[in-house]
Image 1: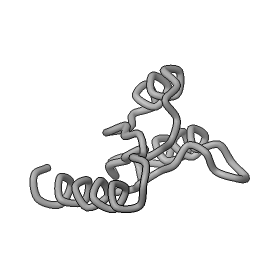
Image 2: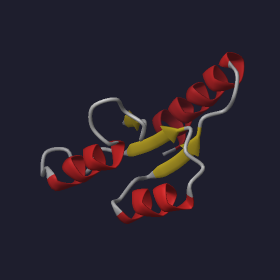
Image 3: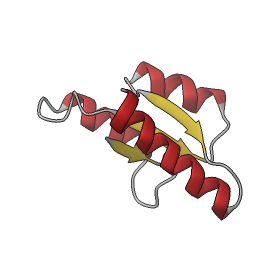
Image 4: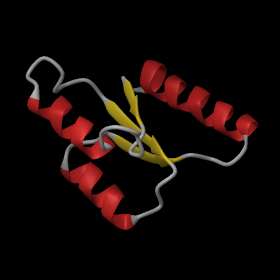
Length: 79
């Protein structure tokens, strides 16, 4: 599983997602966008590009840590 932020310093996260989905070796790896972006355009474009989940980062370290743990649990155990 890849956790991908859309707001990266040198390259747009959506471009990273495009590259992942275009690469035959990486195409089937689940990608979860974990971002601060609430923009509908980012969510829609992410799903168009094949993201498996789009999650807005919770505020505060404890909430963020809990969310990451739950994401890991879902993809490791349930999925």
